[in-house]
Amino acid sequence: MSLENRTRLDGKEIATYLGVNAKTVRRWEKTRNLPLHRSKERPHHPYAFADELDTWKSTKEGIEEFAAEERPQRTVTSFPQNWPSHWRIGLITIVALTFALLVLPSMLRRPSTQGVPPETSVNEKPWVDARRPQDAMDVYREASDAFNAKKYTDAIALLDKAIKLNFRCYECFHLRGQARSMLKTYRAAIADFDQALRLNEKGAWSYYERGCAYAAIEEHDFAKRDFELAIALLPNDPKADLLYNHLGIALQNLARRYNHDRTLYERALQCFSEAIRRNPRNGYAYHRRGAVYQALGEIDKARADYDRAIPLLPPAEREWARRDKAGLTPSAPSKGGNGE
Image (cartoon, rainbow, N blue to C red; front, side, top):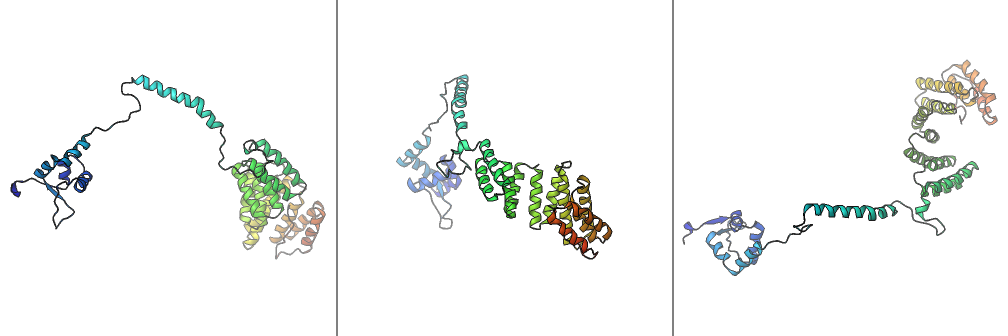
């Protein structure tokens, strides 16, 4: 037969002619002597002749391969094909109920160990029991007693244990922050107040304590923000004069930082005046307001506030007020008392 009368098949035409995919054609070429041809110019593009493929299909290799390709594949089904549909639904329901009644309750009762600290002593309760919030509160009360006795290191150690028992104990993080503030580890205290506020975003006194910690490290912008948040949450609290006093101190310190900014001084005056309105015996507020009046050059008002502050302040603080009164000048603001 001449080449002109032979049917030539190229590329995918070969796979189509044989009824298989291109990968099978390549495999048969390598392992089963499938008669493919390649030109020197295009060695990666095989071609074949239909009559040669027909002849190969009748050989032993071709017969075996086509028998394998045509062998029916075994299918796996979830149910026997002759089962009625309502039988299948019933079986699924029984399996689901069995799982819900027998397996699921045991899974829910099984405690998860994720995020649970390992036991450190054979005398400690198993963590499954120890994670009860009541256990944490018992330890918290011990820590509170230690804090009130000014044993701040002991209080922190107890609070560490309480937090391991209940890592969502707002009171534990708040008190540990206070203890760390008393030890002047202010950054660690701020971290504790941060966590306390994550657990209770309306913890007004946590904002106040964090503001005091920021003030101690002279981050007065953050202190001002926290005191404002505390006031917003406790507008009518009996101790709100304390909050206004500290907000005024933060504004006073910011005014000094920003070249004695008059606007900030005036806002500080408003805060100290509000503190005095709420508690007329707040000697710290009188003292601080006097210092602001002195910074603004209003000497008479400053002297009057110092006179009111001196009998109201504790003995240790009175000397500060006397010194500020003796040094009254409009040129430079006074440092004033601690405002605690």
